[in-house]
Amino acid sequence: MKMISNFLNRPNFRCRLVMAGAMLAVCTSFAQAHQEAAALASVPNPLADKVRAANSRFLDVKAATSEGYAPIPCASGITGGAMGIHYVNGGYLKDDKIDIARPEAVMYEPMADGTLQLVAVEYITSKGPASLDGQLFNFNSAPNRYGLGEFYELHVWAWKGNPTGIFADMNPKVSCEHTMAPSQ
Image (cartoon, rainbow, N blue to C red; front, side):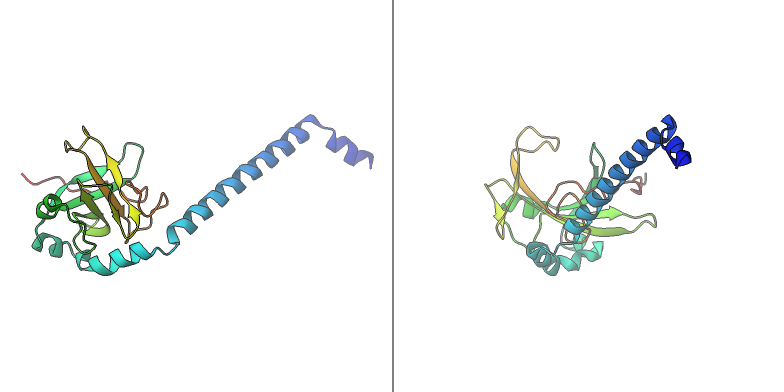
């Protein structure tokens, strides 16, 4: 018994015990936060399901270009994540109509093998407040980083889970790392 008492009264043991408890609490919190984010990203969303059904033709980027979409540079976030390469349809952008099957932009992530993977679509209008199937758009005031007048936009991450939300602007799981430099 005296041996156990001596062991427990050592200053290093108490310090190590407190540190181990603190580390366990921190690791448990991180694990729970990760599980909650993963669960949110995998929750079915009726609007995302409708968007996917209406726009799966864009899985091949050739469908986007054949419908008049043109690429603009890959958009990365200042705090991490990205939106990817937007293929924008100028006609749809100008008409201010919101049609689930005619997004103003189709978004692709550049992959290491040079292919583009469809990750999301974006609906844009200058008329608002705007909504699609009950989901409100985000308002962007002018001036903005795009050089546009004020507008409303809605990203729908229908093909790649987004831990920050299905309708968030940036996706921390998307990267512009493999964007090809334009050929000269």
